Amino acid sequence: MWKVQLFKLNFDEQEVTAVADVVRSGWITMGEKTKDFEKEFASFLGQGVRATAVSNGTAALHLALLSLGIGPGDEVIVPSLTFVADINTVMLVGGIPVLADCTSLGDWNIDPADIEKKITPRTKAVIVVHYAGFPCNMDAIVSLCARHRLKLIEDCAHAPGATYKGRSVGTFGAVNCFSFFTSKNLSIGEGGMVATVSEELDRDVRYLRSHGMTALTLDRHKGRAVSYDVIRPGLNYRIDEMRAALGLVQLGKLDEANRRRTQIAESYVSAFGDLEGLIIPFLNESEGQSVHHIFPVLLPKGCDRMQVIEILNGEGVQSSIHYPAFQEFSAYRDMNLHETPIAVEITHRELTLPLYPTMTSEDIDIVTVAFRKAVRGGGL
Image (cartoon, rainbow, N blue to C red; front, side):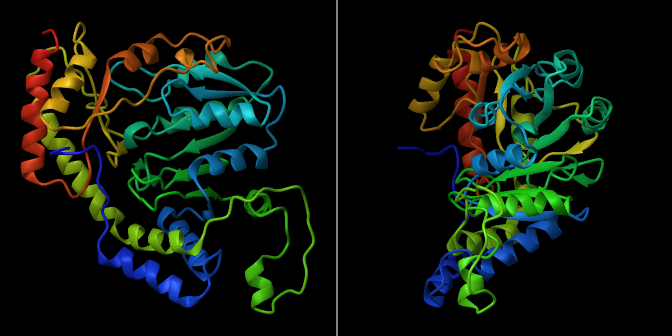
């Protein structure tokens, strides 16, 4: 159906062999591959990070909130422009989500000034998202969290490999979360990682990940334990060995894949610079290095987004929207989530174009020609 789809896996025989080797080994639940993946990912982040692999990015967010003791009645400030998992997990621990706006129509990350405005005596934590792989203003955010004694959680689902002033994102918060969903920069289908420099929080996350047990099945299989204790109530958010093996291969490809994403994004920026009224966010970003998870644009005012999408469809180019506004979801429509006018405007005008590291020059040309045609046909 598609000449160029929104995303394609960056897989080859390495991933096939990695999974086949696990199957042949006879051990497919959390084992040595999981430990290796955790160790390599922690080393990739640096800063003395400890990493715990989990079943998905939402599980990582849930475990982050639980490990920090966020519970009923606690307010958590969340970006207004992000995937629904951030607000869902706050609700599921009994917390109260409070939305903070984007910085501007050119910088879609959470606005530190609006975070500060939304702080009340009940605020316990702040979640930040490095949207599209562009790091937030971490100096300002870390400073305000320290001043107000708030726990900071980084949602790095878009940003494995991104840096802020030379330091990896996912190393600034008390607990930090990664997603390895199919369309992510590091893709294993489902999977995630929790990262922290705190030995105590790392231990809590590991207990919470696997029923609160002191010993895993692998420990008993290897003769390292006969039975186990349960330290606290926990969940089953374990990852399996096949996905950990995929993660190791993907981690080895990540730097080069992120470089290719940057090249593609630069090609788009060059191709669309003369489209009147079109805004490409983060063009003035100078303190962070993005990994370009997606290529989002803000369509010109008056441009009919659905008509643009339909024209792109007709040209064989898939597109998407990142993200609908929380305030318009049935589950949250009647909640007082606070005003976030910049984010809401972005949600109504945003469009995401194809971006993946195996895109060819021909693919890029197809997208740019189709998009220029679509914008001009969308009412401009």
